Image 1 (tube, one colour):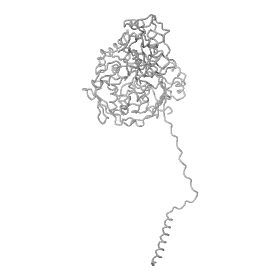
Image 2: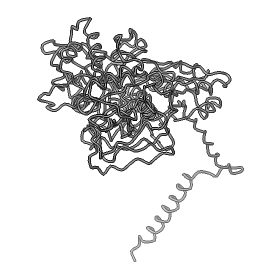
Image 3: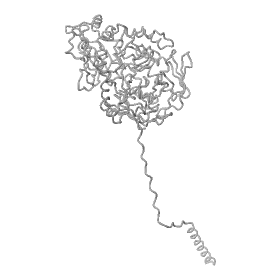
Length: 626
């Protein structure tokens, strides 16, 4: 063994000892005293309940497309105002003002051709993260010019092109002629990116909600079984957020509504205005505030003028003379406003009756008999009217999802039956009724209304006949009342069944039809009663629900939407419409805006502009508990 080996071992031992000392020196010394317990876990704080308000409503409606006649309802109006973007919105006085959360500018940039430029807010976007852009303008324009059963389409039919710039954030809209009411267009835009390629998107995708929001609220849920729609703050909204976390629209009838208001479970309500609901609310202490809130529609009796027995204007006029409009209002909508105009509604500034002295505003069975006789109708020995030797049989339709319309139809049918005319009442879906020539001949599922005082008619044994007599297909009936084969299932019969119309599909001779009001009067008249001209873009434009087209009137409608209509043109149109009677105006529905004292202080709720309704500005409402 080498001599230096012991020395190496001693040296290694010393190094190990030195390393151990160093490691010991680096170790923390134990703390003297008792061992401290770990700190307690933090106590979780309770999350505050979302702030909300509950609004009681009558019916949720058939769907939520604000551009469809079938979907018109107070709920649809409210949702459109809170969820959908509009370039212009009415202020408290009803004057349209630019909504700069949607568009930073909108102006006419050319008169040859008439062109409007829209510069869209760069931040404006749908809750789906798609931008609010030119494609949404294109989608609404294309649908409004070509789909049946839409409201106020005349302005869109004047558009020849919609051009996109700046990545879709600038839009140029070109018109075939100057159109002063251009600010009424492109309200309640819909999300084209979601809807444009979806099957049945124009109607089907909006039946149970709106697929995206471009406003301060978004729809969280629609529960038709419970009768409830829940709106929540749209967290992707780019402007001032809503004060409330949640706004609930809940379907409630009178007694339940009163209990909810008394207990504080309901803050605001919008039931139909009737003496019954006033009586129910009269016992509440403290008494709630009650304000009338007219709807932006006029209910009318539309009469088919392109086929069937009512194609003769003498027959339409006779039918109008047999309808007791006051009795209809008393039976169905006692606090509605009687309407005697085809243009403005009774609640609008400047409204006045446009009816001529001989207009059929009140029942006149003698005048009706003279008109029917002149049109070739005769009475049989039982006092019933016949046409070419066969019983006169008419089909009267109302949208199944519009219960007030169904009650109006049943009441009118009773009156016409008392006058000696057999009438079948049917209640097809509203989208079909206002958009298709033929509809399923299904009976209504609602119970019959109280029978009004019948119109007195000579030689009419009214006490023994039903106001909804079925049409006999074996008889020689008008073409519009004949059934065609169909596999459409019948509606479930009600507890008080109405005799059914013939199976299959029929053309309705008469229809209970809502007419929109609150916008541009000339556009509304041209939309409701004009004859859409074929164009290269729409070679086969949809007809009106009544099929009315009076070519002699069309130049006057064209003038009403032009830059310089004569002051007398609207009155001339009204005179012709009263003579032709494509429809008989009945009434403007009125709701009752009910608010507790706490809700009044938190919301300052009022009827709002006619076109947007009482929930206008709900994004600024506060909770009732402060």
